[in-house]
Image (cartoon, rainbow, N blue to C red; front, side, top):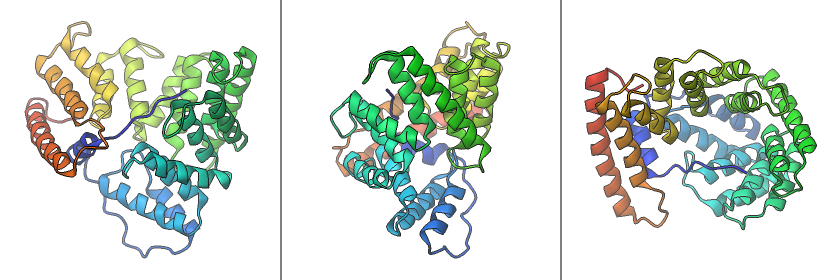
Length: 334
């Protein structure tokens, strides 16, 4: 019912190497109320934020959570489940998500559904997952409604029912549109991607690749890696627009510079052959090697600290060397 991108030590190291330095956090005095701290975190919590900003966002969420903000607790639970700016810790993530879910936070209810659907820290159970998704959807969570639509379509955790699936997809579209009509939030880019997927696949709406591309593009311009990769693939295959390898490569390089594994794979494929008129052995070696280095870093929670530091140092040297060679040839990374 879903997948999770785990961010291991390699991603952290490569983020330090490749993410552009962002603006320094503002120096005003930190607010003291849970609501104010949470609002400040939301204002900073944007796709593609630099390492320092992410650290500050996490700190603000922690302060707000400690003061009783269920929304901040949900955000911490989600970040802890995915290793996003914090150490990945499934038991800790589940505890935070259950605390936020008890307060009725839709995002926490949804993520608990994902945990049970995928066996993240709990025994996999599709029926329990569906129950959590239903509770989340009742709280207005569009992603949970999509998950229920997919479950009903495939008969996972519930009887297969195309009519019920369509109903959940329609509900998801309405919830996404309602969210996009509200003041902007950190989840806006993801909401655009989710709505685009409905139009892309014709779920709950008439299939419309042009509409999907427009939504993906909005998310991509906000820094969404998923949006960037989707825009790239639509240009590469001529879906919703004319086929344009140059545009595809442009967006793939932006996503790959953020360590998106699929984008690196696709770039390597493009440069490996002349199918798209872009054969380039040096570029192929760069992107395929970079992806391999990320995979070498792995996601071993039992890796000794000393070995982790050694691996980080080795990866830093290898990737810096690859980057220097690539930039000297092409002028820039993304």
